[in-house]
Image (tube, rainbow, N blue to C red; front, side, top):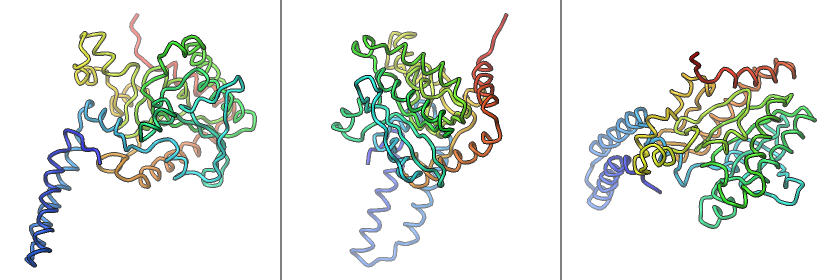
Length: 316
């Protein structure tokens, strides 16, 4: 298991616990009290540590290689998932996956960015960076859901849209802009969840929603901290300073009305308990749908429009 820099003290305590267990087993000595003391110490340290993380530390958890990906959540939350492929213009971008599924027996359209957990998988999913064809595929599925009155759920974990020449040549900016415009017009409930990284227009192209939620250790930002540091400080190594300044975590984003709430993660991050994380996410989605079901199609559109118009502060 990957251990982050700030988690090393926890691992040192865990190693002491394992050492005591080994000594107890080999020698027959009763070391249960000592083991319990260390276990309590580890639990207390964990709770205090993860309750007071800096933005730069949350950044590390959001990028954890073992963090659940889109298909993990789909398999744990939904039944009868049927993936729908292609943008109908010649390509199926694997960085965005979507399809029909049932959530507690209710048909929904669920779409998300996809990351891999190995080099082979990351190459298949382009490290979670969609190309224009991915956004066009997503838009096709949005319109399909709107036509058949299906709620839309998006789960987003992307470092940003793919910045390569091929993406620019095939209309990256236009594809994202079209999604922003047409998502605002959808006549069904739309719920977006940032499950890890939520960077720039690459994330926003799937997040024009009535309800936007952020996992406890995820982040949502107009630019990556490394990119911000490169521009402002001419030094990408100052990413931690940029992360603090950008206000990218849930508490700050809720203050600015950018998101509607956060979703609690298991202690240590979502990668420590997939089932619990999926359970918390599913409960949030069902609660949000219960509220949005009370709105008419026109009210849903107006709610979405007003939500994004209210963002930001203006001085005249």
